[in-house]
Image (cartoon, rainbow, N blue to C red; front, side):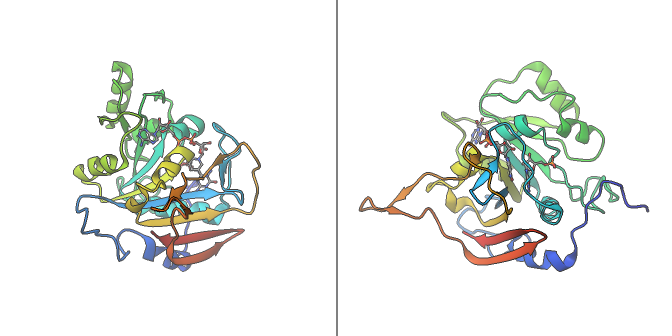
Length: 270
Ligand SMILES: NC(=O)C1=CN([C@@H]2O[C@H](COP(=O)(O)OP(=O)(O)OC[C@H]3O[C@@H](n4cnc5c(N)ncnc54)[C@H](O)[C@@H]3O)[C@@H](O)[C@H]2O)C=CC1
Ligand SMILES: Nc1nc(O)c(N)c(N[C@@H]2O[C@H](COP(=O)(O)O)[C@@H](O)[C@H]2O)n1
């Protein structure tokens, strides 16, 4: 079979470095204290000044071709890929896996495709028939998205999403849905692994002292560029000890740095 024109390739000489941090092979893939919790991989690309994008609402290419292929390899290794609606609105992302041999890209059915999950507490993202995730699901090149929301959902939006096999999932919440509740809801739906891609609000709340322990693996692409002030930055809330002194939010263990093209990929465990 001819290689699909848009397919990416991630060689096994690179994947051997990443595999120990992935759900199926990681030693912590079955956390016994929370049996229903899916394995959580936090992964994103950042600049040298800890920015995800030049400014809110602006999609910014940080990853080079090699680390981009790595991200797609990660997508093929997780049941779902999760983003916030700020990212959905800014990027209109595809959120599928475009690795050669995965479903829709030379592979069978939708095997190896992650399901996109969008957190949209207040129904800000106007999902339409033209949204990439909807078109890809309709065209057999990606799984249909689930949108987690606290709001009522209009008939038109529901029809568009359900028309391609997606669904709205309503969860309770005040300022937002609790991370533990989001992961529990995913676990109850049979999800065993989730990669969380961003954006800033999603990552910063996940890295807050009360949520960081939910993260199992961290895989971050560091690109050799500075984006400057005004970017969407990864800076979690500060953490203090019982004496009130400021302490680090967290430090990774089992750390490995993997050079990929001009980028370096940091792998670690919480
Ligand atoms: N470099 C990279 O790897 C990535 C970059 N980005 C960039 O990040 C930017 C978007 O980031 P942000 O504006 O911070 O938006 P975001 O993508 O973090 O979305 C924030 C929104 O998601 C919803 N949300 C998040 N957590 C929730 C929760 N626990 N419960 C309920 N709703 C929740 C809320 O409506 C919130 O306003 C874009 O410019 C995008 O291009 C996004 C992903 C990865
Ligand atoms: N790994 C990575 N590198 C970058 O440079 C990025 N800007 C992102 N962004 C994330 O990828 C999504 C786009 O995915 P598609 O190519 O459209 O499938 C974007 O929405 C961010 O979540 N990631």
